[in-house]
Length: 226
Image (cartoon, rainbow, N blue to C red):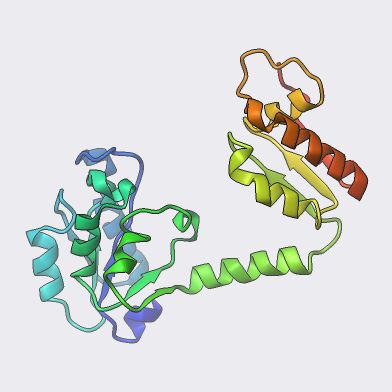
């Protein structure tokens, strides 16, 4: 809305669901364009190209006036999106003069629409949402309110080695759930059967359990496992 109010020509790209490189109608962003139009109080032109950057997109962008908004089709209709492919990255970059990433929830993914496009389109900057989230996280970690409780989930301990280690220096309580909890449960001597365990990280889990005890941090694991 800030960009629209200040006369920018705004081209939006996003994904929805997991169409896995196929143009599946149930994953079309057409309903998103309709809802955005309602929220902004002006028409959001939807470029319904199954290849994302097609003739509809190019025509819509060429006809844009100051303050107009165009929404591209689901970027995951293209297989190379999730592989950070060069071709789609260049195609996206060719449409604009500047790139703004405001998708905090997907900023960690090396996809065409988040990383690849920045190789071919400058300047590339972050938007207000990412700025807000980074400030919140920074404040939460650097000057947290007490008691400071962190919750971690996910399947793999290996994805969060540095995170766990660093959090144990700051938190009062660390709650670990998801698949990664089984690696810690095994480190505590529990039998975990066929549950997901990273065998090469069991020793690391033991070290983190010991560190938590040393630091006086409560490290909590699920008790409703089987």
